[in-house]
Length: 258
Image 1 (cartoon, one colour):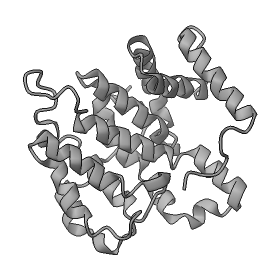
Image 2 (cartoon, one colour; image 1 turned 135 degrees about the horizontal axis):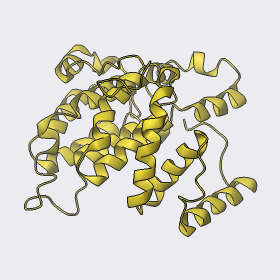
Image 3 (cartoon, helix red, strand yellow; image 1 turned 90 degrees about the vertical axis):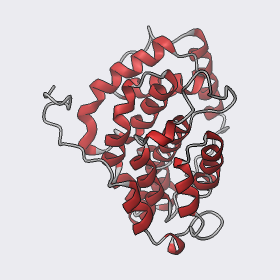
Image 4 (tube, helix red, strand yellow; image 1 turned 90 degrees about the horizontal axis):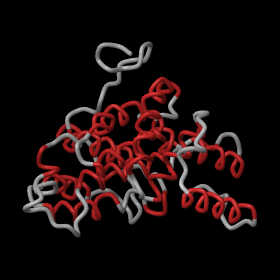
């Protein structure tokens, strides 16, 4: 491990540019989204940094739902992801979300929702999705799907932005960050981070009861060659076997998520 915490031999990871450069320097109206074009995005994305948590909560739905509709990566998805990555460390993003005296118990923190969105989008562009696409549409699938290819090329940038939150004091933030970086770490330049991520995955499994997060952590460890037998609970085994039975009888679609 190097002095700055980067695995020895790993390239330095540069994060995204300043969020204002992304917001002001992108021709949003020219980019495709689920309902049409991205002309609504500058206003919605700017509201993600509103000091009012309720305004931010609405902005998450308004901005992010339209650029990953039906698990599709659109033209606007990549610049939105770059903007999201660039604002993760902004103070306004967490205003009022983690103060026990003011935080609304029913409202999930904006930071957690953005990390989850990045992770979900990364899974929509992961190696498994590429393999499914190639089986269904031929070996030129990724070459022709420019938006997915662009997102995959930026995985080191996104991982650099998310990685600091693996040590966040809030468990929901830590777990969302781990689930996000797992698919990002598939990038060929990022394999050296998996030893560190395996430690975080074990920590999650020792502390979390969330079925989704546990499934992602266990799947990552298995993919990286780790024995998970002593980490699985009875509920984990039941969930895994239920999924395997569903897949065996054709209960899960082999089509790519777009």
